Image (cartoon, rainbow, N blue to C red; front, side):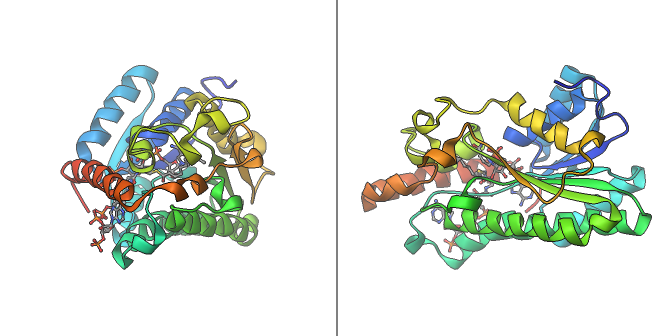
Length: 293
Ligand SMILES: CCCCCCC/C=C/C(=O)SCCNC(=O)CCNC(=O)[C@H](O)C(C)(C)COP(=O)(O)OP(=O)(O)OC[C@H]1O[C@@H](n2cnc3c(N)ncnc32)[C@H](O)[C@@H]1OP(=O)(O)O
Ligand SMILES: NC(=O)C1=CN([C@@H]2O[C@H](COP(=O)(O)OP(=O)(O)OC[C@H]3O[C@@H](n4cnc5c(N)ncnc54)[C@H](OP(=O)(O)O)[C@@H]3O)[C@@H](O)[C@H]2O)C=CC1
């Protein structure tokens, strides 16, 4: 769809670019000629991804260790990137999530999701946006949301709430920062299986509710290049008049329902106990690899 110079002269930060969708979006940006920065909390994961993507695409990719729940960590990261040259784009992709009955969430459980998805995305937008405004530079911000911004979803309430807040930020700042030439858009993917998301949202491997492809009208999961193509388009100069939009890329899933976790209402407390143990094991494995946070 795009050629190797569609994004030449673009320098784009992809938060959470070491794994999953962020990694595949970065692959697409690199193949289209952009220079890419990725960030996350696990240095080994980031380093391995940089090596793999640089070998596969021949593009320029760098990493930064950063906990996006910490505004200082973000500001240090963005300052160090701008010292090497200003960014032209930001993809807000890092997130945290797990399925749980809302009645069982502790304040810390809620905060773990909100502080990453809502606060982390906002702090990153602010750190990049204020530098663009000060330098008089145009830029494109794209946030990776989910179709729950329109439908909500049972059993992932902190995620649905936080993504919806970023949807609102997208519309609001598109207006406030439009005069500076800064565009804000978002994408709302349906199910694109990744290890990180499926261990937290499909921990029994039974693919019910939102992770079930049989209820998608296109009868399949999304494929990574499809999402990467949309991100490349939104970062390209050719769509300079497109701002304040959240674009679904879900094979029609949310229009057909159920693209939510409503069907999990039949699970017993024992089922939820097993689910929580599986999610905890996944989170502990990732935590033991962290260099920060
Ligand atoms: C229609 C489309 C279908 C698919 C849609 C997909 C949409 C969105 C998907 C995603 O966003 S997937 C992203 C998945 N990746 C990640 O989550 C990576 C980052 N994850 C993490 O950092 C951890 O998993 C974390 C638990 C979210 C946070 O870790 P942190 O180290 O900060 O916290 P902990 O100290 O481990 O725990 C904090 C707090 O949270 C409680 N908790 C943890 N797991 C559960 C659980 N399964 N159920 C209930 N509560 C949980 C934990 O007990 C702690 O609270 P306290 O006990 O201390 O009160
Ligand atoms: N997979 C899917 O079907 C869908 C995914 N999405 C969205 O796509 C995005 C990527 O999800 P996916 O690739 O599936 O999941 P992953 O778990 O693979 O990606 C999450 C990334 O975020 C990073 N991250 C998490 N917390 C922090 C933090 N505090 N500071 C810095 N980085 C952090 C993680 O790195 P580390 O742990 O090293 O910090 C990881 O690289 C998310 O926004 C998700 O909501 C939306 C709809 C569907």
